[in-house]
Amino acid sequence: MEHFRNFCVIAHIDHGKSTLSDRLLEFTKTVNDRKMQAQTLDDMDLERERGITIKSHAIQLYYPHSDGVQYTFNLIDTPGHVDFSYEVSRSIAACEGALLLIDATQGIQAQTISNLYLAIEHDLEIIPVMNKIDMESAMVDEVAEQIIDLIGCRRDEILLASAKTGLGVPEIMAAIVDRIPPPKGDPKAPLQALIFDSVFNSFRGVIVYFRIMNGTIRKGDHVRFVNTGKEYEADEIGILQLSQIPAKELAAGNVGYIITGIKISKEIKVGDTITHVENPCDKAIQGFADVKPMVFAGIFPIENEDFEDLRDSLEKLQLNDASLVYEPESSAALGFGFRCGFLGMLHLEIIQERLSREFDQEVITTIPNVSYVAYMKKDPSQPHTINTPNDLPDVTLIDRIEEPYIEAQIITKPEYIGTIMTLCMEKRGVMTKQTYLTTERVELTFELPLAEIVFDFYDRLKSISRGYASFDYAPKDYRASDLVKLDILLNGDSVDALSALVHRDKAAAFGRQICKRLRELLPRQQFVIAIQAAIGAKIVARETISALRKDVTAKCYGGDITRKRKLLEKQKKGKKKMRQIGNVEVPQKAFLEVLKLTD
Image (cartoon, rainbow, N blue to C red; front, side):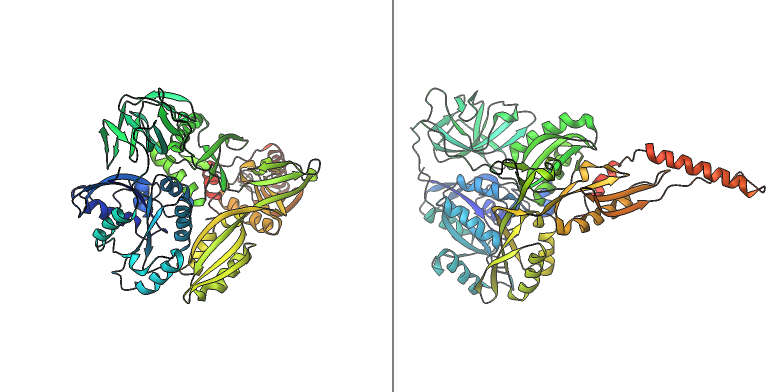
């Protein structure tokens, strides 16, 4: 165990984590030149296309140190986007140290601070690494001062590197050995291993990734998963490299995988403890905090008969992404589907894309919303959670509705403070703090309603600050708000999948936007279609799709005008009757398109 080092790489998005991981793989010759490619550890096409890490990836490296000893490194490369912070927290729990990567051209950004606090909470040894020092716009001295202010280290403790060229990699490897402590634990104690990730393989079942805190596991051992109480044989255990390498035994301090032939994904819970059946450990390891979804949306199959396939796909996806939460729900317009909870809009987008690519499931997503709490007049002490607009009780019975607020950290250049404050105030935000980190960097803290940042906030922030502002947030509390349910009516019938809970001040504008979009998307019928947005009985917006008109007078040539009028009157009565009994079907394509109005 003296020769083991477990560490992760943490940073803000696009600061070079995956590129640095590539250089570490090259330096230790873990991957040969033929297999080497950019973002080697990012094994999803989606990650390569977007240039972001979505999943944390564990891999074992071997490093011959200058003292003549070969050290074993377990490296976990983590995502940088705020929507995947749960991946980072799980990776941190499996490590003793972290490389804190900071871009020399951009300096410390919001997610850098957020991830650093996570690492400090778990008492990890932090090694600050300044990346991209070879670039012309690198601000080495300025960023070094920021790092010293942030973590209180000495100037000579900051490692300078360029992940692109490999500059500074030998120094990083030596620092990992010298500064990060070896794992603690007793290989002879009862087995105690923490599950930090899992993946579904269609041939071998569920493959579980774990970190051994105490004890030793051998191939063929009879093991128990403490929280679920299920018992299995360890058919195969091994270490994680680019492919899985089987091993006969793994001892305390190591990271590896176990295959037990589990086919039912519900039997695995990330954060669970693995122990032996014959000699169990006294208590389970403290797992991870239950994930709190921020954004909710309904996911429905395009064809109703695909419902069970969608359930299986979500189960398998949840294995690999423990922050996904879902439960069944039904809609009058869309049939049976699932109410899903996500950590943010990017998370929702990625899940939708993964369902399509990995499981061939094309789905419809309803308007995303956040979770509210309603207090009734009858029993004001008992809160009712509202995840969908249809959960909202009768407004006459409600005492008050509270919505979730977040504390947002925005780090930017001073010249953009005015436009950022305008944006946040437009989103009903209140500024609580303004701190100058340096003369060129200022940290703004706002309290904002979560519902206001769900859609276009991040994109607008990036555009008004020309990409210089970084954004991070954490849940704060619930506060009373004037919320209303906005219904969309087609010829007087409500379409439940398009209902939304919005703030009263913004309801009319939001309703007009949806009505306008529907008018463009719905096909014309033989009768007039009225598209309305309503708050209770009050109509706040309306668009009309005129009827298709058949030329009933085409066969009349010459003759008395009264003959034509008679035919037109007959047509008019027919259209009136058709409108009364005509049902407006919303095509699936229109659902998909109308829900993009917030992009």
